Amino acid sequence: MSGADELDEAIALANSGRARPEPPPAPRLKRIRHIQWSENSGRPENHPDTGPDTGNAVNSAAGPPGGRPSEQAAGHPGHGEGGSSNGTGNSGPASEGRTPQRGPQQGPQNQPGPSTHKPAPSWPEAVALASSAASALPAETVPLPHALGRTLAAPLRALTDLPPFDTSAMDGWAVSGPGPWEPARAADGTERPGILAGDRSEPPQLADGAAVRIATGARIPPGTSAVLRSEAARLTGARLRTGTPPQPGTDIRPRGQECRKGDELLQSGLAITPAVLGLAAAAGYDELPAVPRPRAEVLVLGDELLHRGLPRDGRIRDALGPMVEPWLTALGAEVTVTRLLGDDAEALHEAVAGTTADVVVTTGGTAAGPVDHLQGTLRRLNAQLLVHGVRVRPGHPMLLAALGPATAQQSAGKQPRSRFLVGLPGNPLAALSGLVTLAAPLLHALAGRTRPEPREATLGAEVSGHPRDTRLVPVRYEGSGLRARIQPLRYSGPAMLRGVASCDALAVVPPGGGAPGTDVPVLELPW
Image 1 (cartoon, rainbow, N blue to C red):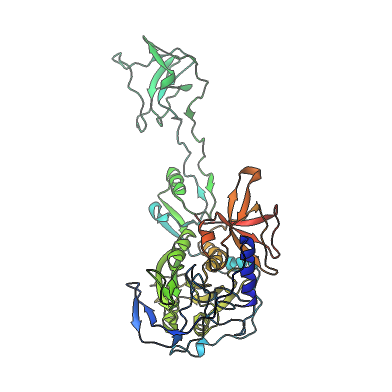
Image 2 (image 1 turned 90 degrees about the vertical axis):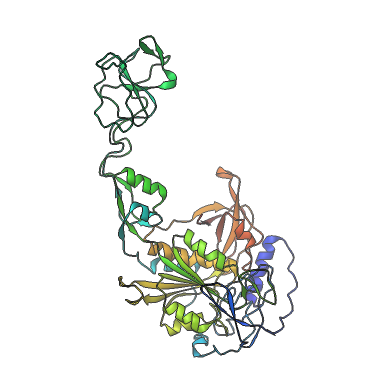
């Protein structure tokens, strides 16, 4: 374990109030089968042994730390947790890395990158870089039922007044004057039929002192001064009476009460929700100009992962495969597939080179260890590294790369558009840090969506900080109103999911930590 990860673990333990455990013994080498995952079945296919492996604990909250060599030793300073495959124990680059493995997939593309690269950006800088990396996808005009989940590409302006005519807000009587009132009569002397919502005929003029039954949503007859609710009216003989006469305009929705034709109802850049669809329909729209949801593909890396059953034989459960796809969906992406690739360099290269998704999200492998093939794959593809490490704990080995536009064949005849890759560290909380830091602002940019600014909340307890890096800490709200506070949760280590599974938000704690009563930004969960 590196000094950086010892510090992270000490911080997590300090916040939990528990004593730091003794470090586990070094893992013993053992041979396991190489796993190549079948995309169709999601089950492992057996392959011959390819060399020693540790069966490192990378994806189980109960698993021991272990795994890939330090990225610092490979010439990449400042990386500490989660670079390897997507587990709850593997921190990859500078801490819980794998024991070196030899195998046929080793090659020049797997060699660590140069030791000199741009300093890792701060957390706010990384968010800004991801937000500015992409422009909105081309807008399309789609029918209302197909617009849900997309982004409004133009301001929504009313095509008519709302309501389009004076309507009744209640079932009752349309009355004229102070009362009592005489029910309106038809030509044959019988009481005139009531006015229903949707009646196409123009309602007749209501004379002073007259009343006519009316349903909610029906057009108000000319001359009506108010609507008398059914429960407040009593018909005595030939007269309609009430104990409390309604004031003029009572329970009448006047034409244009909500908007006038041409008014801007919603600005562009908003997510199209069911309520937006309802408003658009009420305002006269049959279709909307909308930016499509970015297409995303998830690649789960790591031979040590089990995708069903209990951890066994030095292998542990994949925690990120089941979690990343719905998280991306909640962020507005359309996830086309989650593929299980193991630690196969060629499979990874083929998957990234041939993708038609706007964003590829990988789990683990962001370090420079012998089975961390992501950086080598990006070099082979001449990808541009936009973010290579972020000064945030957990999750600082995360990366963002621009893959370049898809080919015409990949775009299926459509206009080629730029593609991106977000590399998430392997530890679960570190991976979620990568989602909120890089994936969320990138997806908002591609969707043409206005990115919500984090609001601030007050710490109810001290949160230990990293001396140089921002910390993202799971918190829960306590209290309400001006007395509301956020309380840090105990299980906030990079390999833990217990805290984030029960949290209300993630607090953005600046370097040095935060004292009780300090206001800090909070990132709301996307659901």
